[in-house]
Structures are given as C-alpha cells and as structure tokens.
Image 1 (cartoon, helix red, strand yellow):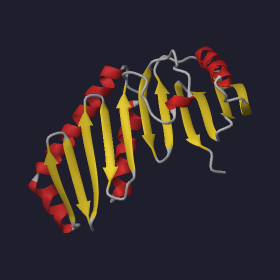
Image 2 (image 1 turned 90 degrees about the vertical axis):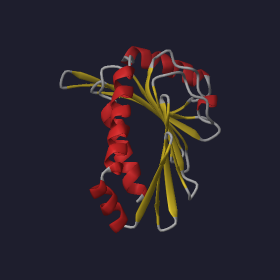
Image 3 (image 1 turned 180 degrees about the vertical axis):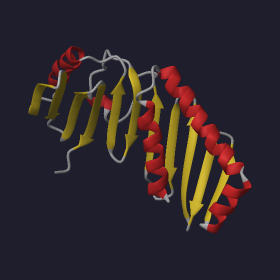
Length: 196
C-alpha cells in the first residue's frame, strides 16, 4: 500500500511541475486532494477499500490509511504536504514559497531562482526551479563550488535537436552529492548523502 500511495503522489507532484505558476500548482494540488476526499466519501470506494483491507480516516487536513498494521498519513497545510508512515519513512513536499530549512539546505547556498517544488524524501532533497536558465544554473554552480561542492564528477552542456542541456554533478568532503540538471525546460537539483 505504501508504495502505491507514494507512487500516486509522486505522479501527481511531477505533473504539477508543468503548471504555469506556483499558484496554478497549488490550485491543482488542492483540487486533487479535494478529489481524493470526495472519492473516500463515495460508498463504492469505501467498499473497495474495505474489501482490500484498507482502513482510512479523515481528520482536518490529514488523511490516514491503515493496512495490516501499517499506517500512512498525508497532511496538507498551506503549501506543504507531509507524508509519514508507521515504519518511520516520511517525506515533505512544498510548492513555491521560501527556501526550506533541512539537513541538506544547510550545506547549500541559497539560490536566486524561484522554487516550483521542493521535497525531502527517501534520504534526498529535490528541488525544481521555475525561472532557471542554464546561465543562472552555472552561476549557482559557482556558488556551490565555493560552498565545498568542488569534487566535480561531471559538468557539461550539450546542444541536441536545437536544445541545450546542462548537467553538473559534484560531491563535498562530507560525502554529499549534488546533481543539477537542465533539460527540456525542467531545471532541477537533487542532493543526497553519497552511500556508494
């Protein structure tokens, strides 16, 4: 059940990256969460969940699913969604807004680009920028290098089919790896503890 819910939410979140603005993304998110709440109030959906052994509860901004003693809670608050499971795994997703504070962002310079989405899940910090260009990403890479991400594995710009793609991958001395990618209008960054 947990993987199914995480996959459904990941698909929802990834589809929102293509929205025109952060406000449009939030409107889509609220609509999808409303649709989920409506579906859970449908007797046919309730019967299906019961037949599958899945229990659910809606309290305020939180929807909780339980199956075979395992619980997953999805909470929506403002521009943030938090997912927590009874086995200790969790994720937090935010849309737009300010640069978040977490173990990963403490290592990074604050970008001058606007956030479309930021997420911490499965030991990784992922961010998608709304107004990034390859030049802005290259400027940010200079800042990353000054902040200790100077063990560079890859830094390249490729022109293909009339499009430019940019990749930067580096590690710092603490074993954190950063990967910045710009391709087909999607500009993202992933930071993770390198466990290789």
